Image 1 (cartoon, rainbow, N blue to C red):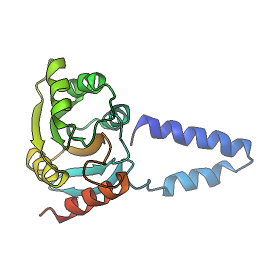
Image 2: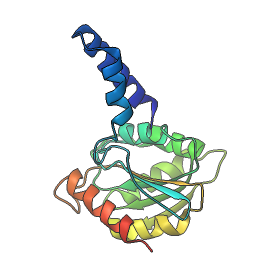
Image 3: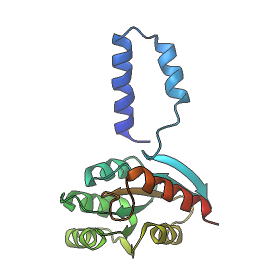
Length: 179
């Protein structure tokens, strides 16, 4: 999902066309492509809620791209370790597009302050967890049928994991274990 991914496909088609690839072959590849792990990766649907793993989103701007990829109501999971980047723009977007935010990790308090400082026309349900596993449980509690749970942390994984891939694998595992 996401317009940024459409732009990526168009760029690939442009390069493929310049390299002499046939349009039919490129279309076939795009239709069969199922995405890349930890990049808006669909994990599962449970009780009408779709869960997406965007663990690679280690900056607020990348998490914003994830939010903008969906029209459905969003339960957003944000946190990890802060990279000393501004959170004000994502805070504004959250007030426009997100119903529930589950914060976790070292950056949770900092992100909560940014979201609270911005305010907005819509209220946002904020929940905090110490670790990612607890955040998954809180997101499951907040989500209802028709929602998207978007794990797009905006921070690095180094407060709890060795890298974004390990964090994404743990997220996937814990989501699959939900009953």
